[in-house]
Image (cartoon, rainbow over all chains, first blue to last red; front, side, top):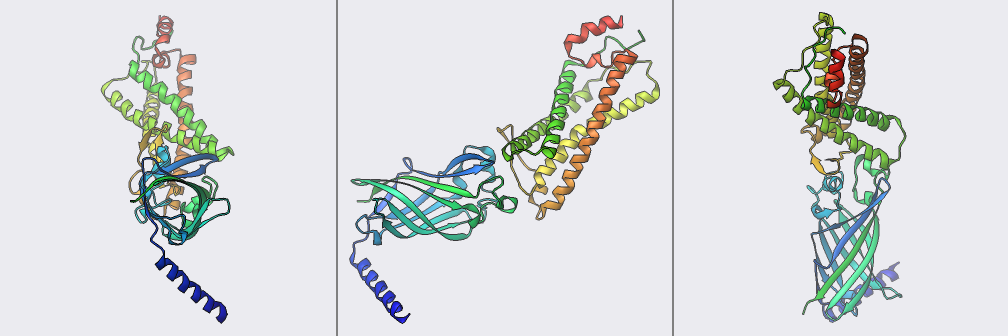
Length: 190
Length: 199
């Protein structure tokens, strides 16, 4: 036990040194016009998709220095649109996003790693409707000079975050599983 | 032929509103009974509820038009031969029918507003329609919603009974008494026939 604690302490110390030694990962700016932060769900058996039109992200990313890379996204939940007036009226309400109390959702990465197949995954914390849970977002990255295109998909269980209260806590009308689809184009800061 | 007040018909607007609302009420009764008594897939049940809400609010709006029209246009008078008791019964049932045109959609709207599921109303999937105040912001909606739903339910059965009585009375006038009480509310095509019948 003590041995592993010392080992952990050493590891943290080493990491801190590495982090200090490495140059900060470059910042990236999302091109909102070319990007999409989407989500998907199922209502009474019918699949639907939607997207958030307002969000911002602080991305520091260097494929060669993933340990200094970091992603933080803040989503304005009132910007959810699914193309259905009824659904879009319900979403901000207190049974669902409850934007009066929780206007934003955030995702902050803890670690970003490259997988053997060349794609990446960002493991972090999603905070939504006052609940914080780990979320891993796998994504494929295509860097072309100063421009990068990331595409990824993750799923979550909406009720873990309290999205869908009362009778909506069952999947009878609205499925509990919700998809998140990112399709992000970003430019590296000079 | 017995003496009937001939030549006097309801106005085209009154006739149009009467039959369009009759169709709507029949549709609402069928849909309402289906959604409460038939086991449906959630998708179909949801769609039926939305349609029921849309038609119900349409009836409510049409009821205001209809009442306004009725207040400024005298309906044709009842056949002279009608006994006083029947006149009273006709007057009372018509007054009740008018009342139902408002009260039933209002209780339906109240049920929707107090429903714990809190599903927004978008008429025919196009026009957003608000919830009623107070009911939609209650802390404990379930018991209120339960009482309102029961009220809407019982009143709906009362209206079905009243509409049946209304239709039976119209048929009695047409088939037994052979006056123009029914035909003067029929769309234009029947006018000639009724006039000939009255000669």
